[in-house]
Length: 530
Ligand code: C2E
Ligand code: CA
Ligand code: CA
Image 1 (cartoon, rainbow, N blue to C red):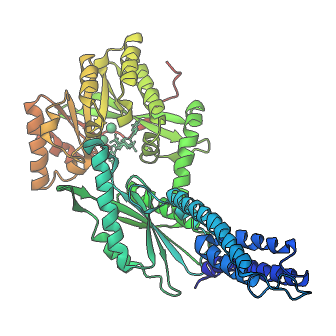
Image 2 (image 1 turned 180 degrees about the horizontal axis):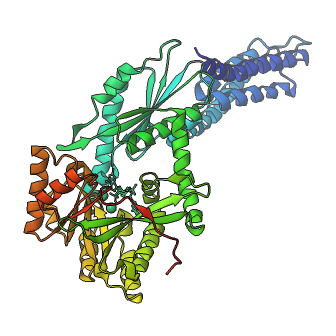
């Protein structure tokens, strides 16, 4: 029996002993005050009510019978004259005690059951019957043994809801949580909890020296990346796991939090399983700092614009520039866009960046130095909503900028992830903006859907260009160029670093090139807001 059980056993035993002690005490009082003829027998109702209300019907009944006997046949009516009670007298008293105990006991049992039901509802998830986050949180008594927390999240589970609707989604959750629970049955020290949606926690209490989680991980991995059958429909399920192990005596709440930090890292880096390390906190803290500091950085002029030239393959003439965001702190240290853009994309702040860069693009387009060149701006998924798109069109109109000078760069991911992307692109295209697919070759690169969208330019990713000096790589890029030529899509090679690749791109018939061979990104001077 562990510490908690001993404690709750004692808590339940003490009132019972106290009740019996009171009963005996009342019997002694009755005897020494002269017998049942006096009023003190009525004191017996107190321990009876006490026991029945705490222990319910059964114990109340037993206790009432014992109490009745104690002041029953062997208790004189009058001690002094040694007169006995008549049997009818003590029988009716026992019966009264029993009736009182039964009434109080039954009501107490009903109240107790109701209480258990309420506390079950608070600590359990009604959909799966599993314990919930509240239970996990409230079971925070410090353990004598190390504990591991596994946070498990099914990847993109919200999409099931979108695709299949609520009822079927509930079925998926039911089947998955049942499989999870059954898989863990052979690990008696592991318990499953449901956070919400398709996010679960597993709490493992380790035996004294045993910290091995391999067996459990192996069992979990048999569930990962496979199809489960839900009402006869095969549903593909893939999940990520974050793990943290606490030494004994550490606060379990920390363990839960750390496993969630590890889970976020697993999701972010697309890894099946990640164990918590303290530098993850630094990483997440820095994400928070980026999100917190961006607006101020923008206001203080720490967000700057760099430009990189884009050249015609044959003549080498500069045909356009791409604008690239730069974050330069006051002490001249820099945060690269690879770090801050993904953080901003998770917040509404990305609009501020896009708006700022678009504003710079309008500025440059009116600058005679950039006459005849186009200006390319990078856009993110959440930039595509009716209001933002409309405001871009209006802004260009307001500043009398010919939209065909402005190139809008989006990745294939944007094409796949944004609802109504077709209508947004059609709208921009109709208003004269040029639509560019960036990093082509890193995503799904399906020609099928590319031909559905109003795409003017495809930028072939550096990773493909780098392979173009091998026969297979050359062939691959050649097929992209052939496809683009067929649909009158202009091609741009990205990341051209030397003459060898510049020549290969020219030979491949790629129209334009960008890369360190031609120019490195250079900071633009600070410009006033338009
Ligand atoms: P990207 O749009 O593919 O931009 C090209 C990146 O490749 C730039 O990195 C550029 O400096 C780099 N690059 C250019 N030529 C070469 C080369 O010859 N070799 C190599 N190795 N790299 C070359 P940068 O400026 O660090 O930007 C990284 C990414 O950050 C961009 O990739 C873009 O996805 C994102 N980004 C930058 N500015 C913005 C912005 O204003 N808005 C949004 N949404 N994303 C931005
Ligand atoms: Ca780009
Ligand atoms: Ca690119």
